[in-house]
Image (cartoon, rainbow, N blue to C red):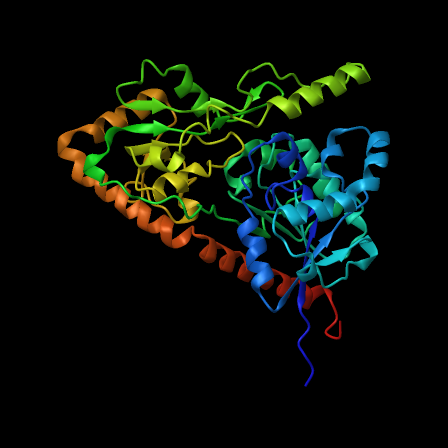
Length: 409
């Protein structure tokens, strides 16, 4: 009996991808790592009908991605050494994964998953005829670069934690290559440790605001978090702020083209050693903090995406407060049922919190928190999202394959 051919799904330079593993940079510089898609990788490795492949391209030495082409050409000699080390440190069995060393090994019927956060993954991808999927997780405001990469490789599918084409006008304007279709929503996933363990009536009748504040070329990516942090004392009767800057000492400088080589290297080294540690932000247990409060806020990004903290806070039993612009409806949430909406202004935010702080509104507030928690725990857990994504991915590939590949392939 002829065995059914396994579907190959390929990750490019996975050892340098913080969405999948704790990278060499995370290990050496003791930086935090979200690993937002590790659950997906684990799910794929558990499926007998899927063959997981890791392709390490010529620019596969992860720490060298920001250096010059000359420096990268030297560092690339150590990419497979780094790959094996990182796989071992992350508990990944290389025997269960097919390693690819040349782009020519990628077949037409393969699915190749790329991440926009890592432009060097796109090298030579324009020559590949496989089904290419681009994840927009951690999309930066450098939309021109994103557009250039997309126009170069012409992906068959785009996926992201939010529909940027709907909630980010700048992105939609820059990315004329996109026809409005072939987009797959990739929902957020909460870690299992985020649970509700404190009775609602025993919590502080205030909102907790969490989330990192980052910037890109001087522009704040999470302005709502920044405005709360800058008004901490004024808001103290209704909001307790735990927002912190990603670069906590605020001294990290961007490397400029006008800098000499030595100065650029000095700045990059300083950045590696001093950013991403977030000592203050990780000085407390986030699960315990969420369980102290009845409400939570995780300010959204200007890129058109919420922070992952919104599902984490809801999973801990908090009544979530977020923008009422339709952003959360794309996940199936309903304002007034699963979450509390506000218009993005401090006045409306404080007005809403004070309204829900009133004794006569406590039962309804608890109902929103309970309903939201139940919805998140059902729809945003690892198993549910991994199964959903894989089904959508394989369905999209099946449609594409039927149109572009001969039946005999």
